Image 1 (cartoon, rainbow, N blue to C red):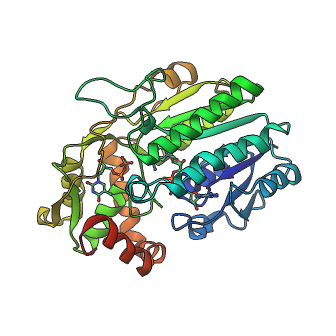
Image 2 (tube, rainbow, N blue to C red):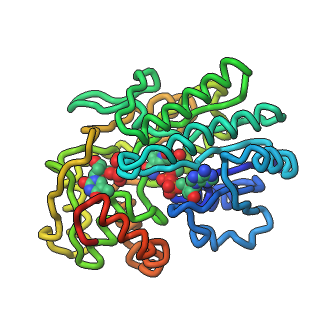
Length: 338
Ligand code: NAD
Ligand code: TYD
């Protein structure tokens, strides 16, 4: 049995991945998470007592803790999900993004390279490629050109990973995925924000003209892609992952409101995000051809499952969004009472 260290496992994608891996493999999972506002132990209640699961509260920037865990838990593989992940927050203050996404990644790499780690996967984002016009797709050879402090910090992490592969022959891979959606996503990101606000008949802030495009992928499809790369990905490679499901923000809100039977009048146009990337779209032919992965969940099915989950887990939304956070969020981001 392999021992895998998942960092940031209490967040959205990390918690979905831990549940997926425990259900679909024989790995023993060690989760290191410092529990920021986006990390919630509640996301992993269903596996808390699983003998193949162990949690450590701690920061990836703490090199002695990271080294101790790798040694004591006999870690073979690491997947780094830990990050500050929200573009709007990075525009307000980039410092914690640089700390976690750049320095934290370097700390993990440095601790890991001194051990016998077999595989390290850096969970990155298509946002490192910048923005597309109406045509074209990001491939793994698209030059990196991040536009937000968030994507710049993720690109910094990616470049450090690359340098460790080249310099130390470190067995790392990078995955760059498009926008995920699904259960357990913190309601600062657009899809859960639309659902949470609509359920409470609150205004839904739509940035700018609402025509920015994202390529949406159901989180379980991304979890399958990570598992694939964990088992079969080639060391030193970058793999792009996408959902084959481009939507602009206006149509996305419309679809969700229709399904919730809520009026479009909830949508409120607000000032555009600074440096707002126009379009992301992924060419995932490399992972498809090399590893046989493709997205399986159609957007119509994934969004219904997601809506149903939030409708059935209203208490989760209340629990993760403390009033202090919501006040701060409303004050700083939207000019809206939420
Ligand atoms: P999230 O914000 O929901 O979760 C991040 C988790 O990391 C939280 O549990 C948080 O407590 C933890 N964390 C933050 N800083 C930490 C630190 N210094 N030490 C230890 N733990 C720390 O993020 P997510 O949406 O689950 O994203 C996970 C990863 O996937 C990130 O690296 C993100 O850049 C990447 N990604 C996300 C998306 C998306 O659509 N959500 C798309 C592509 C890539
Ligand atoms: P988001 O979920 O923050 O993901 P990212 O910026 O990393 O792609 O935003 C998705 C899209 O939705 C993006 O074009 C910005 C837009 N958006 C809004 O229009 N209103 C909102 O309140 C938020 C959070 C996002």
